[in-house]
Image (tube, rainbow, N blue to C red; front, side):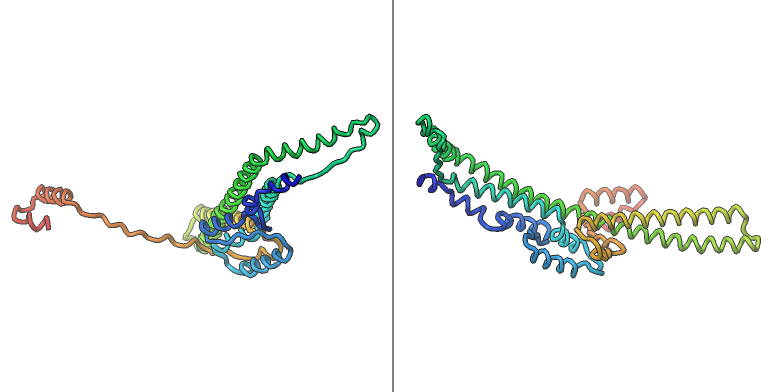
Length: 294
């Protein structure tokens, strides 16, 4: 029994030690890939502190894509569930690396027949079997623990990507709704002008009907654009894990402009000869040949 108690793998157990065993790797991958901080909330005090932090970021403010990703990593309940799976895997690794617990069992079922060795033999055989298979079981548990780490990191990066994409879709939807609203404003003015011109006889009824129909079509498109924008924002709210008054935030009215990339096209000698030949065919004088090449 003393031999069994000394079989604990302290090196492997150190990986699974701590309340957030294995989370350092997940947080490092998240920080390097997204620039945002991931958090594994385990106590009510931690949840309260992060809820206040999230409220300070989004409450009544216009959030950027980076802020949306940060709030999602701090507040998404599905992500916290994946971190809980990592904790369960760490607990399994700790139990496996700890090894079999020595125990002595005494049975009184064999007092009548005088055979009390069967129960004692069963207990010892079970402990020896655990000791023999401990190394392979520890390697398997360690592999599952690493898989849980990578799975948690994958869930974190997937959530960050989905949140950023949803933020872009929401901003684009609100920008489209704003553009349709501007077009409808112009259509309203055109419809009113058509009605006034119709009263004076300068515009036929068919043209007036065309303007009114176009205005009504834009009104329907504006309502549809507003609905799509609201749906896109609600999807972003779900990813951020917000509810109640926490949903009172805004997104920008337009997407940021893309950076213009300057392209420089080198002029080769072959292009110079080709250009010079074109000039000659167009009737340039042979005396202008050096100037054309330069």
